[in-house]
Length: 242
Ligand SMILES: O=P(O)(O)OC[C@H]1O[C@](O)(CO)[C@@H](O)[C@@H]1O
Image 1 (cartoon, rainbow, N blue to C red):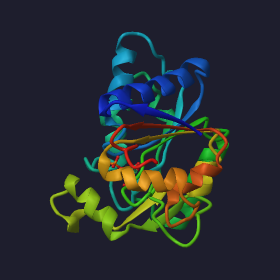
Image 2 (cartoon, rainbow, N blue to C red):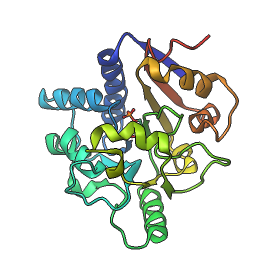
Image 3 (cartoon, rainbow, N blue to C red):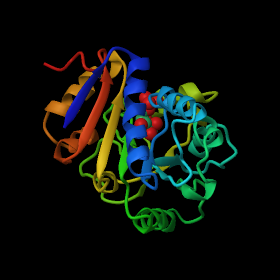
């Protein structure tokens, strides 16, 4: 595992954008596993800036997203489909047909999970999986639990996640209670993982994830078992590392 300490959020965003750019430049038809949330917003803005300068070409890139709220239509401005278009897809030359997210309004959740997992397989797996981390150590929407999930699954969100995400909604009652997410197994099958973390409020959890016991109670701790993980975190997020 390589850990890069960034000065602040902006520095973290630029360092992470460099790693994604290197992937796109060295393998133009790569499969990027993408993430949403506040953490990667600045990194996407940096990629868009470099694309506009002519430094990046996404024409052959394919993408799969980590997660999507269940029951949310794509045109809802809180859907992760909407987020990805707003922050990246609408600003670069990626082919929309090559971008994939779980379908939040699929009728049969079990079938949707199988379809999505097969979609990822049919693309040859993920070359570089971007991750943020929740305050409780979740990656994707894999909440702390008794075992690591193997495949894409439909999860009940924990109260703490609903609390954390209510800032984007009118009230906590409006936050969806379920979401589709790649499983921990799906994430671990990516060839390379890039974890971005920012802020002191995640420092204790990040220290547990990187240096504590590997346990499904801290889902991000499983990354200690992956052979190619890059962590880009700001000083505040790394402040609890001994
Ligand atoms: O970057 P944020 O907004 O703190 O979210 C962290 C994580 O939470 C999720 O958005 C799910 O809540 C993940 O997809 C993300 O990586």
